Image (cartoon, rainbow, N blue to C red; front, top):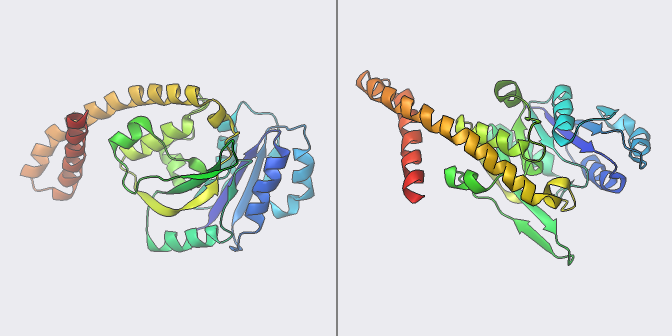
Length: 264
């Protein structure tokens, strides 16, 4: 049975942290790991953590250099086969979510499971962001997943590397894009998983986030195109030698690329 870790990062969002940890504490799944990474808060967050510390698998409160350094600290502490990053201020919408995820993990093997998010706008109206069931290059060119609504195989961080802290806002996009281009399997969970806090730094600095996304895309795609070109040349040899499983994978990626370029 795969283990699940939940990691919450926080810095001076005591009220949001309270809401987040409450949504984790009421989960009906009994056996999971919960880790808190606090950036040395001075607003009462540390005291809140200390008052609940017996319910956490581990926690730290110390200065860090931003969101992704904090997330990388959490990655070092997880022991579960899969991890959910639920940032302070965000919360699970369903008390049974982790139990539901465990059932899905046992039925459908994937590297990253992702679902939809709920938000509350400035007029106090709730709205949902629905993600597509099939992800392709068109999606990744302009969009990303919400990492709070994702369940990620922990071993991917050993394989692909942790979050790249040179991208202060969009390192999650860089990680997801790398996983997709490496052929990792994404599985869609068609439900609203979390309530996403629109007062978080990525939401408040959305223009900067988009700029970083474009930089990541422009850095990553040319290397991918070059690799696919070389793989396609090798594919002809593979087909001749009837190494069909490898050749089919290369051929699928090449055809997807041709479709993407045609629609540009």
